[in-house]
Amino acid sequence: MRTWLKIWLIAALSLAQPCLAGDEAAEKRVQTCHGAHGTIALEGGPISPSLFKGRYQDFKPTTVEQNQEFIRISIQDPTGRHLYFHVENSVLKPLNDEYLEDRELSQALTNLYKDIFFKHLKGESELYKSLKAQFSDYKTVRLAFNEDTPEFRSALKRVYEKTAKEYEAALSEYLEMHSKLNGARHPLVEEPKLWHQAGLGRHADEAGWSSRYARKGAGETKSPTLLNFRDPETLTAFQTSYANTETRRQALQKELETKKGILVPVSALSTKKVLSREALEILRRVHPVHALDDIPMVIAR
Image 1 (cartoon, one colour):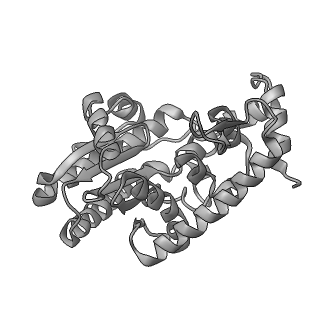
Image 2 (cartoon, helix red, strand yellow):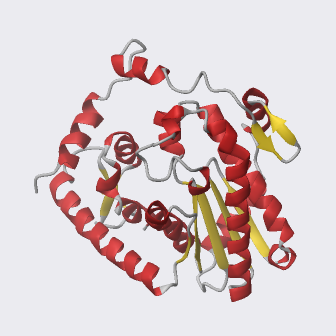
């Protein structure tokens, strides 16, 4: 198997060097949106970007204990009787690396979305009463509800759509000043309402995969997308993705098994191997975005 992946992984793991401050690429990245002005339209009134970052950069809607409880519940829920919801900022990396080039601002903008989302979630009283566990990290919100009902799915869709609408209204004036966002080649970057895609499922992994698959639909329809893993079209897409991923995994294991640091066994007694965390981190930084669409499923399992 001739593969760019083999070449990049071996070279990157053995030869990776930190970028020098004087590199031409680094110098080009400096000139982005630093001259942009305007305000961010929060509920309490417009706010300057510097004050906004101070307010939201470290905002966390959930506690460490709540995060741990969500993880415990998601692991100990083999029956699939709960409803899981997953929403994440699917463009945080390109915002950081190319379009905003301000990690503090990107994180604050992501955290604003979480704040708006939880406000609308609390507005759905019956849904909120059924909330069993909640989790958040730097780019995601994950929720578990006591049961999966059509009413709860509809309520979550309302929360998601209201959040996207308010989020875009809050950022539209300010982000118009960032010329690199206008006409961005990334299909989801130009409109803030498309930054966050969401998924539903009977397990946390199902909801997470659905939210990632929703990026494709959002890029085509230019609408915020919430997908249910149990919908036939989404389930078929998952099965195809998983089959493709397993084929790639087997090919990689056959060709790269002797290369130290690239593959690790999925468990102590297993002969099945997947990409190591170090290899994945390198791939995140260097691979073409479209080339490894299915690989997260190898790692998830």
